[in-house]
Length: 335
Image (cartoon, rainbow, N blue to C red; front, side, top):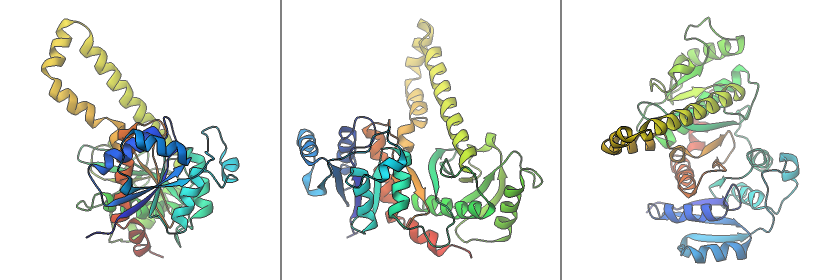
């Protein structure tokens, strides 16, 4: 019998908390009961919500925290509030009472408090924010998405390793193929830092992944590679552009399929294919960004997602632990 994964849950982060958090837990328990949820937040409020949704209490422990971190709080002010649901959940991971922490709360606060409480992995220079990004074949891991505006070649090397470790933890049957996001695929293209990173990754062989050179932005979703490395500034712009493009396409498609009786009949006839299309672009199914580089996994759920999206972030939590993400990073660091 496998050991249960213990997840520290900040119940008070994001929109519609704690309702979406507890509903997400309820949904996840329908597919996996090898997990214990330590839920941090105001005890009376959480007890009332748990009773309302008939949650299975054998899998849930409430830890009372009367304070919460708001989206409007700065990371610095948040770091001073040590009795908040977020701080206490992170501290539970620090003290090894939980395996992983998840929050839909303030991203800056989560990043700063995690760094204050959880040690960096030795020989990793900077942490990175990674996320899931669909491609034609399966899924990409893209990092960094905003934790580091400026990066050097050592950071890119570390990101490649951490991204590949995450990919193999989430998708153990797939081979990790790493590429650097660049303005061209030729070796001469790009700024000096990315050229140096290319030379390092090309010259150092790592059993965890295959280095495949550069990739341009228009090829990210082709599926030729599945780990894409960039700096936080570029990565965040790429992510927001992709999100905006997906929203635009979905909006225009909806207009086209509801504009007139013939269009409505056509959409009815093709309803099955349209549902597949909708599901493929549903961001809730890819919810769960990961702070990489710390001694324990830290999972960031999107603040505006619903309980379905939060359920997916819980699945990411379990897979990072069972997939031995941290061990993979440590074992494959090339000094």
